[in-house]
Length: 443
Image (cartoon, rainbow, N blue to C red; front, side, top):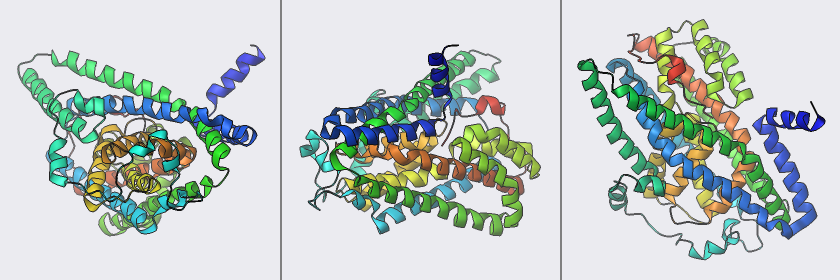
């Protein structure tokens, strides 16, 4: 094997986080050397974000359809799982919104000489089209507008709520079709089921390729940022990173502790002694999919029944996304603040709903938090071009937050499994084995 082939092999085997760090370093060096001449490199970040955005909508549709067709659980266990997951989700979103509203981290990116101008407002020639920061939202009218009038318009526009509405209606219809065929002893539904699963997996693969291009985007963004602004933006990104870690720490260190101690009636020492291996593994892999076998083994050692473990960690994986939801709620306000926009109460409620729906729909893909953030921002700020300058900058630190989100999601899976086993020990009807119902990755 030649040295060139060996180098390529090492590069391919390098973890994504390491590639991102290399991209950051090379981008900083390029920015310092070439200054403003690296301006065209910023298009790398925009291009990759647009690619992810274009694939996220179809993935959301087929993720929901696949879930409707492939899983079925008994009412008591299902209701309890949904109740626990929604409670945690609401608290996670609330924490994210509270931190962003109270600490205003997005303002830390206003580093130019003119304090009224944000980083993003100087980034794009299209910024002249910026929206009025004092605008309000007509909540009822906007909700009605989210109801799709055509099948493909929501996907073209990347409207996350509209896509989920279409997916749910189609999913219910397909589920009804499957039930009718099962009652008649027919198997024609399997072709539809397999087709949807194949398309879903194909889009996952495409998105995985797009995610692998993130280091190139980081290189372009860092080169352009350092070349134009020097190191001044890094203070704002560190604030963003700190607020994100703080919020996830509150969710794990306060909310989950209350569940464990007061509701599950477990000692904190015994819970964390059992869960620490899976959490550490999630920190290393930045993926709850890669951690799933470890999570299932952890739950088995903790004495949780296989049925409750599979229901929470495999079937319920699209609901236990507190890390993603908290991050999105915090980040969408950060992006708005960096653009000089204060979201109204109605817009923040819309953002919270979009976070919840996006988290449910695409939790099963690599870097799901970043991808769903793009959808949420597109839903809340549909006509704001300045966001395209801010979001690529977040790529530079998202690999750190991705690990924190994965750890939070794994703890959520373990906690929900423990609670299900305590309060709903009835065996659920799971139509697929864990391997068949696994997501492709979550972070």
